[in-house]
Length: 397
Image 1 (tube, rainbow, N blue to C red):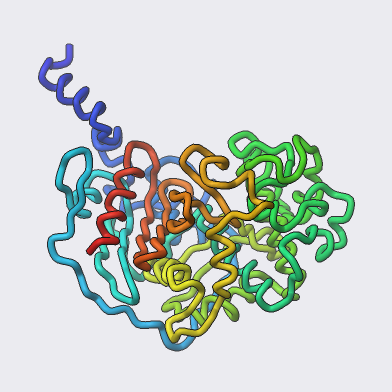
Image 2: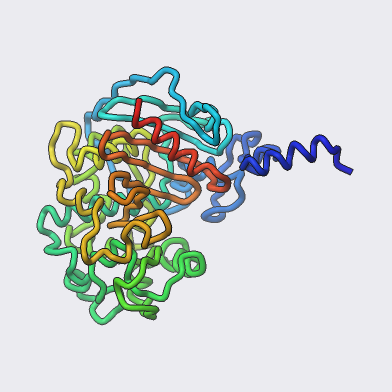
């Protein structure tokens, strides 16, 4: 029989939201040196730390996006005694990190790093996996295509640029509805990824174009409802490769990564034909993720004040027009908005965010230009509201 005091303490921790992994031994593989698994895409928790910080690059096809010769500098100006309030407690970021399985946390503003930590033996030199934060990178590239006139209008159907999509569901869908996850396709994220991922990334002969063209069962009219899925960004990737005449990675290197002043190469997963699986699979150093967040915070301007992506596109991503009704704040999901592959936690569009599986986040506060980056290996527990409260406090320091 369990000791009464121990049972009481465990029950109290569970009520307080303390993560279950805190009660286990070596869930994340520390005693094995954070091993990688090359036999499957995602397996046991003990492989996540290693896989999410370089391991996947040794087992999945990818392109390399090279950095330029000179990185945009960061000033290290740590904030002393930074704290926030959570559930009545006065807490520090280090206390947050001690509780949740976070591999990296960085807070920055206007080129100044206010806080930076790595855990689970991760290092600043490691590329950290984004999962679906890659969708927001795709959004920035889509904006650059519009800025350069490679795409005439967000309200054009995809087939205008990719004729082989003519007569297909995704070809008939406008770029706006694809970017807003409103294609109308009969696809369920939790159910259908078991089919999508082998067909477009992980199978013996994965082919993104074949997968997108073949998915033609309609569940509702285009634009009617927010339905988060991988097919919408994959269709946008087909358009961007066609209008730029090359891979998304080559375009990202020339139009985004080097102008941004990234300090190190990034990588992006591909299918067997070299097409980016651009709904996920973009990996970069924590400081380079912060540079991407800073680009949004500065309304598209780079480290030298140059326009990398237009302010018009950043405004598009942070506002809702008549064609975006299904993804307005509170309509996409309760207390959440979505727009052009960015998430929103405020109705006025002032808090755009990149979200990824297992707790990957880039949060941006537009009024103060504050950026927070988190990489992690799990999303269970009550961490997310605490992270937002920490971010609120960071905007005031």
